[in-house]
Length: 187
Image (cartoon, rainbow, N blue to C red; front, side, top):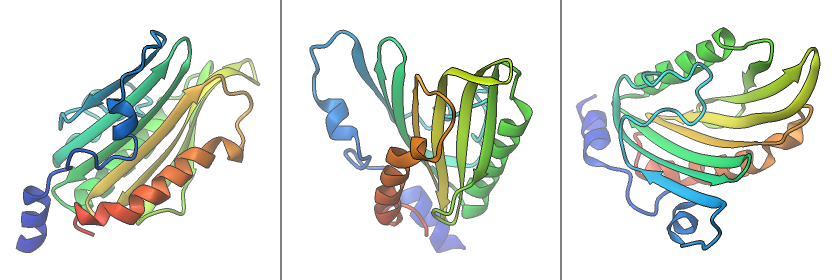
């Protein structure tokens, strides 16, 4: 138990560890695109159905977040969060699942299914609706836990009816991160 805690405390998320950090560091002259980067441990989850700043904060030791925005309505994000223990990371994932169930509205609905990635994971769909029909707009996220790490990849934009193919890039990115996250996490 003590060695696991020491690993979690000693290892930080190093610069250029996230998959999109080099792209985020590249200056783009397009005024309609923007990258933001944060190393704040208290950063909000990039998928946060209830928009609660405290969601999944308990037990965090490190976090790194990248968000790409393209005007008017496209964004993608990458976030890696380290927790003091695998159980704290698992609780964060369960709390996110509870938020998905609790915070859907008739005009914008969230749903989640298990994702067979990492130790456990969720495939989360946020979708705008007009009546019972999917409208334009939504987000798709893959959130996985490996050991004491939580890994999040999202894409938001002008989605239509939800489809499995909507998660292709997030799944690819998640698999790439899962292959390397144990170099900084207690797996």
